[in-house]
Length: 325
Image (cartoon, rainbow, N blue to C red; front, side, top):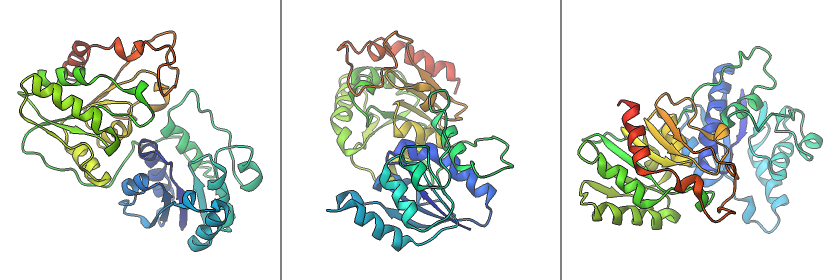
């Protein structure tokens, strides 16, 4: 069976969608996947053992995105089943243009006219991994409602010593970011037990460098700053090899969950019920229940950032102790 899966644009969302991909693989044992998505998403998901083809969607760069989407669909050909985890009209059009009869997308004004299955899924009270699973299984009568953990097929790096990973960035905006000096204080508290790696994308190097500067000021020497220096595959491999992860609500948080890495996730303005570390038994979130949170804004609209400012280094240090690792 040939299944087309249009994965989400964001790295973290794609990791969460991997739970649904595992479900599809278990219910269709002869499946071969074709994945279409953004560069970062494809770099994470293309290592799946049942992946036959992985395509980076660059139609947005074309003069006519509609025409480029049509051409891409014809290059991909027809499938037994096609699913998009995106909600934009071009992803629905891509499925439609392949000529695939059984096409699935979340209910929207455009998908309900273009595609065969467009279920309405409760997006407010359940985790995104669960939402993606419900979408993928909408045509499966014997699904037992179980949604597995996220899973990536990139091998972990084997570090010589237990390693603490720090991710101080967050793609959505500054409101999701905790403070460099506080990350550094937590890391310094555990530097005798762990070597430290600072992780991040190229656009997160500024905050990573601030964390590094704070570590130096605290006398920490057993660290390495890898922000902006790793590929997506290398980022996943590094996180997978960590013994502990300190992170904001971000792609690396979800990668850590996929590898069951003990994680402290510091969450402020986001809908934590939808994005907490999915089925990570050693994943703990720290958040303060404020009247203004979650606001789901890129920057604090009230200018005080209390949802993150109120979380202290000592609180995170204690949370690590409570993990009992």
